[in-house]
Amino acid sequence: MGTLAMTTTRLSTVAFGILVVATIAAFFVTQHLKVTTPLIQGAPRPVPGVIDPLHGVSCAGRNNGATTISFYLQHRSDDADVYVIDGGGEIVRTVAIGRHMRKNVRNPDGVFHWDGRSGDGRVVPDGTYHFRVALLHQGRTIDLTGVPVTVKTMAPSPVVVSVSPALIPTGSGSTRVTIRYAGNETRSATVLLYRIDRSGPPRLIKTFVTGWDRQTTVWDGTIRGGPAPAGTYLVSLEVTDAACDTGRWPSRLPPSPAELARAGVTVR
Image 1 (spheres, rainbow, N blue to C red):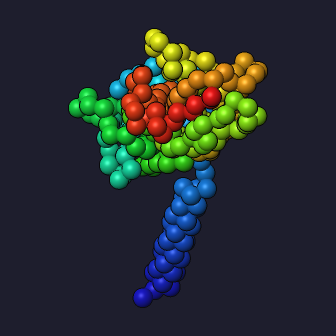
Image 2 (image 1 turned 180 degrees about the vertical axis):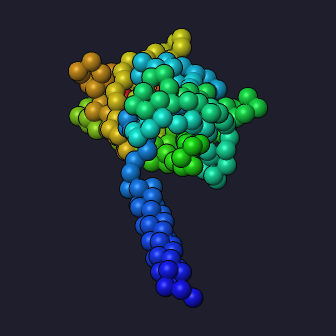
Image 3 (image 1 turned 180 degrees about the horizontal axis):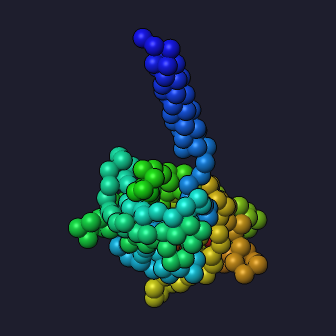
């Protein structure tokens, strides 16, 4: 083999080696960018974060029958598919297919709505869901698991467990009635005190709000700033959840004898 041929071979081998090294380096740089560089910006999160697509009411100034998420692309334009994913990782709804999103344009390109329903129009089961964004030209997928949306169609089921003491002698000076309750889903509850020993329907005479994440509260034994008059009273409970659905106990008035035995207070 001639000197020129050998030199050419060596140069080709070196060039090939450089190409391999460059390709490997580019691969690792690309992988690093995939891991470290955010693709979407704008603090995307569903608003509202809890929805009730079955009942849909005004909740904190918004209709809670659907949710909206919005974001923008940071580095370059792309076409996006957007899905809603359930807790098992399955797609329950395709929100957008091939939506063209311009770089740094949030509205209207990056605004997506979900009405809490699956692809066949049925309300999805109560539970936690998240959005998935697939950027088609970049071959990238982002699961927004850190900002989920909760579907909640069942109202709370609060219950008064006990009231103690059930009898307050008028001359005892007692001003502390302990109320134990459950089913408030860690939220605050509203206690409603009804006078039920007179003719006619139960009459609401006092309300007060309990603390959050509690299941015990105290009625101070007063009405309108003074000791409660002699009579029979019912302690009722009302809880409103994050979807603005309200549950009440007892579910109807007047109470049953069993409900009155559990949550009645007599002053005499």
